[in-house]
Length: 630
Image 1 (cartoon, one colour):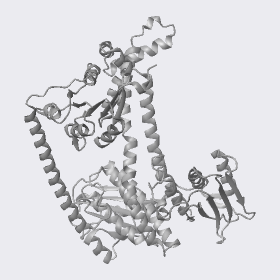
Image 2: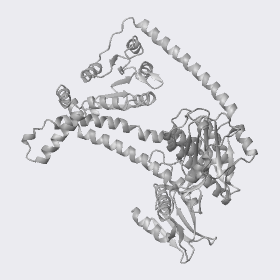
Image 3: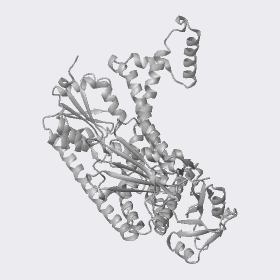
Image 4: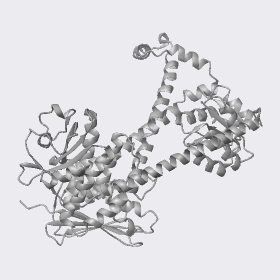
């Protein structure tokens, strides 16, 4: 058996998953393949591992292969560097060699690739005629690129300065050109942390208009007598004027707002001039398209959100899903803000400010996290499809006459017929396979590789779906019944399989039942106990103490969960409740656990609080309404 420590090491710097996978399959039987997806990671990996050969894709993000070769040559002057490129324009090869590369390989990679690697490892250096001329051209290219970067940077600085002066918005560092779904998710995350009702209304319409470039946005809430949809916030000068005049619409199906609230469905007017149900607003003369989105929490309509554009046909039916998801988050935020105002009016502004700052740093990381989890899926699916075609070509060569089982013969015939119906030329594929080298053929029909790609796609999809469940779970309709929290928590702990002696439970004899949805509240205590256990990873003699009793306010039952872990730093205690904020780094945390816990508890009319000191553990106190006796 070959000792991998004695094999030559080849570092491949390439952003394409497919290209890296191909090189890995062609060379991994003979070399140790190191991989980096960008230039910076490649520089660091090269310096740490000092490989025998470095391959660099020419079209890297923010840097050319020639520039990367120059940097790598300075780090490892004795290591040969080879540029791989699909760009065969005049002068590209010459500039790459002038920059310090010993070779240039055009894409697509052919069957001589392995032999080429052997040659470069054995000292092959491609000759460059008129090297001084090409070096000058390369240096001129660097100067022009630097000048262009300076111009772009100067323009960006001026643009950001203008935006800061005009909008004074906290989120000016976020990218402005994300797709509609990403922007909707970001808006929902932004408004979720705002705990003051009036601040929530004002910021929501401003954020929606600035992020989506809408002409106008407004929030209507149902009046106490359930007869009117009352405007509570409007964007810009028009919104201020309508607020000053106490703008409201009668709650019936004749208006778009009333229709959306009553039917709990979004309504679109692609051309407002021809929409009879739309209120003709004199303060918004430039409106050409409008969408009314109901604000719903647990099947209860709070009001509606109107978004308007000065363009015709600005909305489509597909937009409803994305924008309604944003409206649902806004509705939950409004509901939470109203509850928080009633419970802690004196501290709401402080909490809002701190959580707002947390979202500014956590939102971009959360979107990047989800994007990273989704990124491997297309490449894995593509590779599975390619591998499956080759395997089908092999299967189709089985002689049906030699098969004893009639069902298997029929299945084989079906494979051939369906392949023909799909215009899959199995004979052509087989001819291609026959022309391949044995090592490459074995790599292409590897069952292990096929299963690995399927696992990648499955794991990515499951992780993304868990994010979805964490976001929408607390918003599901509740089914409240009298529940013994003592029995629920004991069953939850028993199913978690924690070591004996870790959990200590104490229950008051007069502890009443709680009026809650069993499924949602079980999730609350499962998350809290699981978080406590994970916090005890490095703690000797770990302990989690669960205590249940009637609260000092007899209308509530109180359950506390206390651990003897390291505690939660004071500076992040307000941030832990924010969606996507996590202290677990890359260990798998999504940052939705405590956010959903707070939503569930608040929606039950209860409350949750934290007490913690560094080195003295943490204690979460959950208060839930007592079930009334029949």
